[in-house]
Image (cartoon, rainbow, N blue to C red; front, side, top):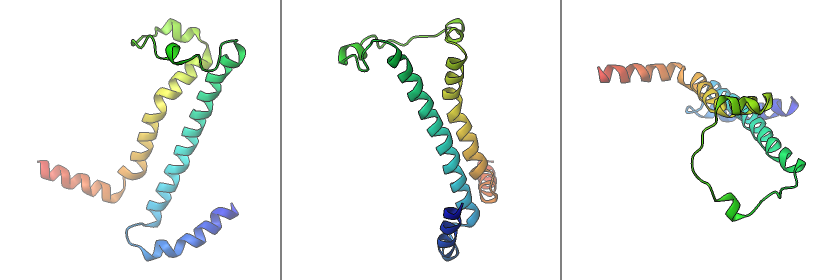
Length: 130
């Protein structure tokens, strides 16, 4: 907490000297970076862990070679029975991977797309199109 306070004291003169970056915009960017970091880091940690657990439990090599990795490149589908057969962890992982990007997109829009200047820009664009 002390580090954040010190950073704030050092950054305040810069915020007051520039017109292109307001304190609210800075806080929005800071919040976006924090949220993205939490989501991305947790996603990365979960994916690495889930990929390495089966490798650690089996006798298969970590990297089976170029030929094994680059064969059977056809698209494949997974039925609900197959997906739910993997257990709760597989379902949670699949949904987390699928929904993390849309959730981050809504967060970005919520932080930057609903500001006063953004709404004014939407209004100008709407009037121009009409």
